[in-house]
Image 1 (cartoon, rainbow, N blue to C red):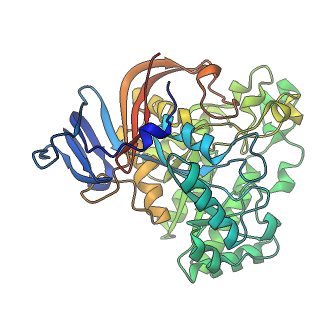
Image 2 (image 1 turned 90 degrees about the vertical axis):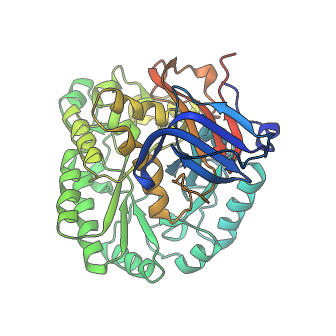
Length: 442
């Protein structure tokens, strides 16, 4: 694969993609047709689209056998910039995103310094403008320094450009603080994104509590560590009527709690990582640290329950959980290794496994990876309607490929899918009508 480069990104030639299957969940559209993009915007997309009005120098792409969708919107991306650029920069993360069909990535506040000040939000936006190949939006810290105590200036952070608020990897332990955060954010329609986990129940656990952990001699993390915090958050969200989003859930009991809450009329949303939809605790195998995640990979029953919850809409969003770690943090005994895995390059391909196995319809997958996260964050992306930004992912759903370390674009290589065989290759990615990635088999 050829990573994107400046000469591709500067190309503003009008684009016409013909004979392509177009899936646009924002319009409930799934049909073969044409996409016309001029000056960075969608002119038309659908079976009735006409390209007579485009300039004669337009680039014509034959999309036969391929699928075009709104560019993916990844709601949970950890980067190393600022503070740990050796793991990942905004530039390298955006290249990885483009190669996976991700046209918008939302970066988490877990940086050094923490994104808890309007000046740092501005820094991320400016740095992304100068170096990134895809759209980049920052989440700002709920509390100063992510310490869970002193509430950040959420209003000023939103004015500076933060699209949501999160405490990243650090949950808010204090219920009163969480209630106040939800109420404060509600005043300006801010979305509170929280990692539901009770650190005290996690303790020294390193993987899912159960028979597999016992066989491996590893300390387990019970599902209740997630459930108890999630149940608390749901009750606080109902009390404050603030906008609440559970960043990642990992087990069937959590899905059931969300299903009940939504059934009771609570307006909230939830995400799940592609890892928890396609992998389980057995994949840890011989203490493979690339499978050490937070939350941990759960049982196969939990995996299937989250897939079912995604299919029926209980879970709103799929994220990559992109969390680059270097060899110094992963090349340790399993219990001592850092949590986290990269994921933007394999997000779409891994999700297609669910479609190929007839578990989740393809339009629902695209909705969860593009249209729904864009709507939650108030972004103009996630759609192919006329006038929208021409952010497009074009992929071949049947092309086989193998994940190899030497082809990974991310600066870090800690993928749980190393050596995995996928069916579904991103062929080209467009951001505002500009080609930022084009597949090459050379």
